[in-house]
Image (cartoon, rainbow, N blue to C red; front, side, top):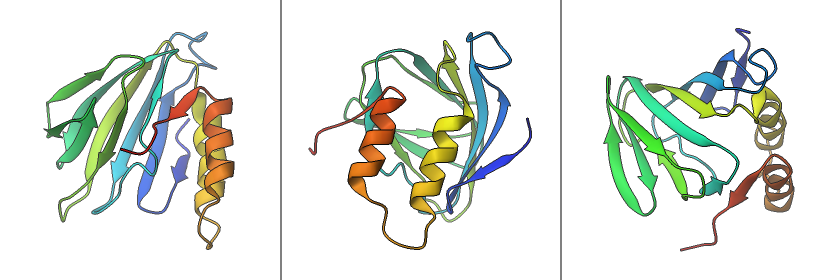
Length: 142
């Protein structure tokens, strides 16, 4: 399970997925290049998310509050809470993402990567449809 899913400024490498853990957990390493960000803040109501910093510093906005996440630090995102992230630094930031239970898998990220790496601006309606199909709910604009 070492294939890298590339979103341009964002790379993911799944370590375990719902497919090999009987739906118990999804675990992936995520690298954010400088200025990378979550394209659409969102929430999910079927799983909780724990993020553990491995290197660099990323900024997580969770329920409106910003938290800088560095190495050996973690944040917990309870299901139903709107969140997003960015890397405001000049260095890559890497973190370990744990989704419990595992209901997402790499398929969602593969489909989203195909939408955002076409060389043309991504279609917001198709991105929203894909997110909703996998249980991610885009947050209304602030």
